[in-house]
Length: 346
Image (cartoon, helix red, strand yellow):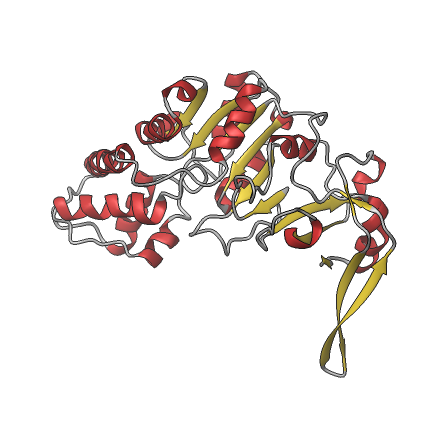
């Protein structure tokens, strides 16, 4: 029988007791009944925990709060150094390393369309919809198939493939110029967690549907050539099927010589999450501008970013804890989760 599971949402501001104020961000941690046998690890002791459960009486909503005796809760995204580390840390590129889509790729696509006199412009909302299609060439092809091909596009199928490939090559060159000028910065915490991984012998790779040259430019120019030499890149047409197909993550695990079950993936989109989970990997989602409203219920954890101190959301040791399935102390939550479903700890 499948394990019954729930998602529990924690406000980081209520679970930590830091010396400096923390932002009121939320992370989602999954708890399953299969975790009951696991020992607690890296817990924060709370003086009390209030479980808020919404109720409705005669059409009036209210909240019942249950005071739980002091217990230990694995709420901290920072874990002890004794936790098991992943064999590999795998990143998506766009939206994870850099928030490139709206002001990077979209701008480059539109500039290409303008220079080629195609009479096409992708606005912010339209591009958000197109991002549900993995790969730039695939995105353009799907768009043209639906709305009609430009008047100056060829008619034959093979010629159209070559036409789209030429557009994508031009777009990639424009995008790389933006990266080289460092107009698009790394997202918070990316450099930190990559440094942690490399210094502790964890392999690091970037797995992206974007063009390999564009991904390499991001890694090289924004992380530096020294780190870039240690990071393996799997991108573009290196696999025949793109996300949400798991092929790129399976290729990464095979090439790096690691088991899929020992890999932690950082993604920002539903299609990326689907690819990682289909590959049998643990997946953390760091939401980006275009993906904040997507469904991430299958993620092992969800954050707004990785974050740098003092606003760090998680670190490498936390990734190791996820592999061990030590999400939530069952001492606190077992009876509430199984009986009553999702709760919010405040």
